[in-house]
Image 1 (cartoon, rainbow, N blue to C red):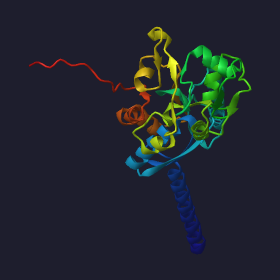
Image 2: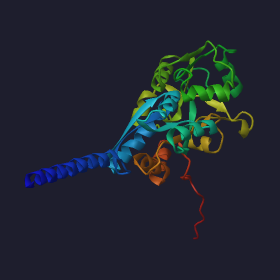
Image 3: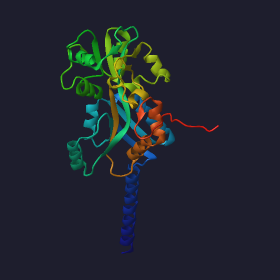
Image 4: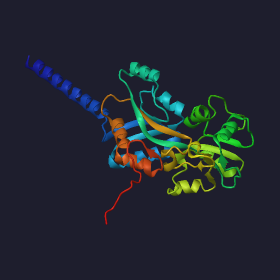
Length: 305
């Protein structure tokens, strides 16, 4: 009887040891703002600035690991249905229908908001002769009614840049036969570097930060085209910059959204909070985008003598 009791107690103790080990494994599976690993999908147009955000966040929180997959916008939205992808960073938020569908699927409502603004930069070869465009001419070039220049975009209709151009410039029509799809933003830049009779479209975070040696190197053979500022009066043209984005002088401006699937405070929430507060917003500012939550502009001051 004593042996049976001892055996029973031993098995009972072993059960609690196994249960304790399993609980430890479950605890380590959870992440927080300061530790853990998550996967996110990011619109390829925003790779330079988001990679910088991740680098700074992980440096400040050494126990975290944010694995970003850079891909076309449509693929990012498809990834939202994937359990392994916690968050996406794209150029549009969720529609009411999309929000309801995800709420039903997930059992809770995903959150999203604008974190910054960038522009679709129009770039040309250093030796290119056409450097000034009205929006009407850009539309005609993209829809193929004007085939005097070759137009190059960052992929097919799955990218945010292509979607934006179709919605905002071509306005529902299709691209003309003179529009070529490069593999990604870097391929657009490389193509324009070698072709004087072409116009390219890329996210501004790839090309505006001339203080970055890497950007200066791969953009040394391209320059910005100037676009007509319709709100500025006649014969006024602008290139993408923080000032022209902020004051609606550059016509091709779009937001950066985060969309987060998290119903508890985890690493995704921590990274979002970081991008929304001063330090993260300053990274957007130093990347020559316009922060959506904090203003870093120059303020006028009166100094008493």
